[in-house]
Length: 106
Length: 133
Image (cartoon, rainbow over the protein chains, first blue to last red):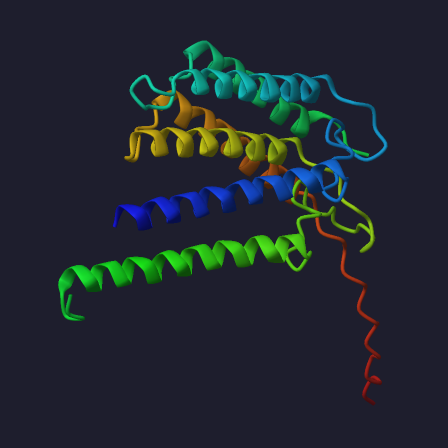
């Protein structure tokens, strides 16, 4: 059964990687539109709270991923997220929702 | 090895189930690649009420955040699970991170859905019956 498990695992990882790859290609070639992500409506200026949330998302995801890669071979659990990081992300998401509610949308 | 041997049966079932799961995943990826499953609006917000049918909705930041976190956490979970050979535990902080992201997405969707729908066209006036004698 071990050989079957190995083959199935490799195939599943390849398929998941292919899914991520296809999504990434479509993001890069513009098929998946990202226009207007930083504004509250079309043809409006960028909102600061959205810029903060975008930076926090990318920085947090990259930091967590690199931190998680370092924990390979050291016990095998996902790395804990610091309480301060959770609060910072929660704060930026709260600002995003606040802006979405109270910023006028033309 | 007889075909009624439990080990043979379990191995056969494992092979069949593995093939089915992998074939399903491959079919989904093939459909995405050939655009039968259209991902073009993966990050788009719901269209505004009264918007033109061909108008492309703007992208949603909360959807993008959820996509990034899903790939990061799922990728790490897969790598570490493969390394240890067992399903690993997910810390509370990671669950909180995913929860905040998903909650923001749901709240954003609720807020976007609260826009009033377009007013229905006015019904034509009914002719009044003639007054009696």
